Image (cartoon, rainbow, N blue to C red; front, side, top):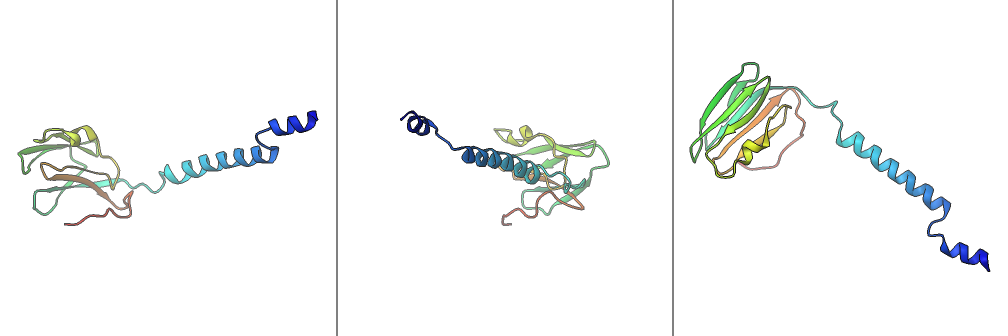
Length: 135
């Protein structure tokens, strides 16, 4: 009688525990291998600035500079420093583009949608295959 009671109290069999532990380790390994694979990330070479309905303008990341762009709402200031780029200021209300911070890897992109200004880094290889959108 005691044997059947103890048997019913066990929630998992030993094989179940082995399968759960194996699944946890496999999940962590797959996540770290495929999500954080930084070997394919390319170095950025140029900054593309798209504003309003104009064609994109390219800037070299090798020269530190501040770029003043006239957006739909007003000026936007973009800084290039140490091969990285960021919005310093934009004429929008929420400043999400400024809070985004530095872009440093080819394929990084951010935009100030109310002001209609976007910046993206380009290089020999990008971190993303494609980004869906329409022009």
